Image (cartoon, rainbow, N blue to C red; front, side):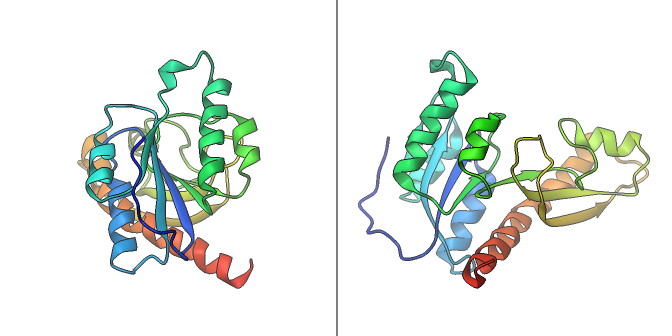
Length: 203
């Protein structure tokens, strides 16, 4: 674990969970730094020790930790370790930013209403994997991404915000995916702003 010596911020705290390069995490961190997002990242956790996003987070002076899922015999044991670490940080929101693990219902229920995820489709359309391929094969004229509250049912929680992009006649899953990804960073920031605003209003 790498911790900073920064004083506790009076702003609402975020715990960001990553598995890879952490591009959404970095976009959120930048938004916090420039004051666009009235929050601070208290903790970045990866389930992969080699995740590039950990290096980026440490370069920004953020507290990081690794909970390697391969060290646990079951999803339940991994999720318990994750839960225990998050309890120490006590974040207002847990942000799944490219976190490639399906959380158990027990974990989700322990943090009910506090977990946000980004999904590359216009939910409730195309939950799960291969979303861009599904959008093209379904003849959709629009695709996009959604930020939603995580519930025990996969990709079924309330949608906070969405962004839409047109599906072009010559699109492949790869080209469509790149255009959606280009919109995801700001979408996540906008969704977090909505959630924090609702918190302030007591809703």
